[in-house]
Length: 70
Image 1 (cartoon, helix red, strand yellow):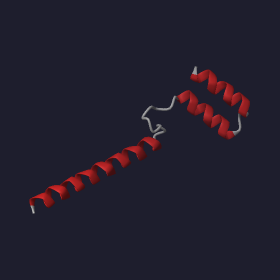
Image 2 (cartoon, helix red, strand yellow; image 1 turned 90 degrees about the horizontal axis):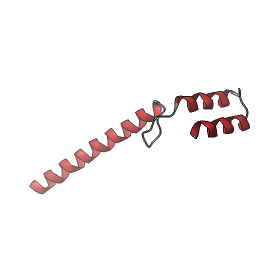
Image 3 (cartoon, one colour; image 1 turned 135 degrees about the horizontal axis):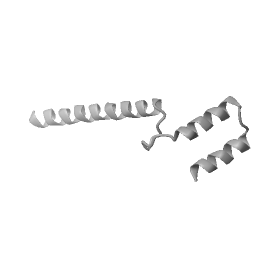
């Protein structure tokens, strides 16, 4: 009976850790963070928003993105 109790507790702990990991991933995505945990540069975020709104064309977007990433 003791081994089943230990195994069941390990399963419960693993489940709690898995749920916590999933919540952290969802919160990071909601805050504009990538999966690797690095926050997106605000300038790149603004550039993407301008491109999405159609304020700049693809060529200008790609050129500015390259400039910001250098």
